[in-house]
Length: 480
Image (tube, rainbow, N blue to C red; front, side, top):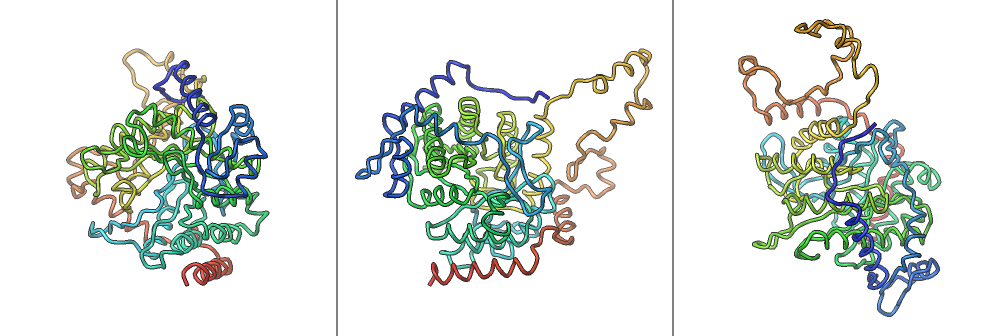
């Protein structure tokens, strides 16, 4: 089945970008915080390590060998077997996820902004469970728990309330072991977690070309635990990266390849998802933007390059907005972004429900994104060309000027189209008789209906108590 894809680059341009990426890594390298264990493993793998400066360079042959160890197909596990995700997605389209780390909450009933709480996060997880178009999620930053264990408490809350895959963003090196323990508790132990990785870890570069202790520990401990690593480069064009997008793409690719190499030096075969999350600096304010034209072009180009040049699964923002509220700007930005990234061949479209450059979330926006992302997935899916789809017999046996409404073929396929949940397709007079509600009013009613339902992803009481014990242990050590 062929899908709808486009590219900014020809083969010669891909070749030049690839050459420059390898040159950047082999001749100039990346800087690591002092980490003797990783230095030793990287040196054994063939990297040129200068422990005194922290600089690590990767000869081209070494980088190509380490890249070859990274699997191109693997699974993101889940507590429920039917929620396990196979990468790449078998139908050639993409998976979807919610935003990570946001701390602001847009109250559905009032549209007021406030800091979110653990109860909000539990409701958020429940809503994700009830939305079939959202494949996995992360946790948000809760304001009602100690800051030093906000990541541990947040993950525990999510794991209690969803049976979908969860991607994990640690906030400190010391928290990583507790986050992995939470995953082990839900999966049923260390070996079970390796076989069914119900969580995956986010590791990030500190652009340009630097890695702090937190992310080195994430890579080391995740690879040892058999967890998939979501390797994120987050450069800002004109700020933490050059102003021109091809340069940003090369730098982001180099940072991601360095993380791939580190993970394979620790444990060959560690699954890695490339996440070139490109921002653009607003030169008038200094603000980092996610949904400007420059940021969208950069992210799309980076995904196209990494998939073509290195054949790695890719993950990026696939929806979201720079706008702080759910308004026309918000809808326009995320519609452009989701379609662009879907057409770029992205394997995971992230950011569902987010606003204000991923610092705030709206449950109502999440419901809309659930529907829009399903539309995008259907749009970019390929065609099946066979006798049934061509309907040749039906076409040739129907008289000119006749219709197909009563044809058996039409009856068989009349429900093939994507049915809207909150989008209007009725005539004006029907819409007016039904109350003339706008999109947000319809989505609010949908939200109220969903939240009256039971949560299908609740964790059993026994494992939930085990998670609570791990959180308490983390509080005693990290927050005392």
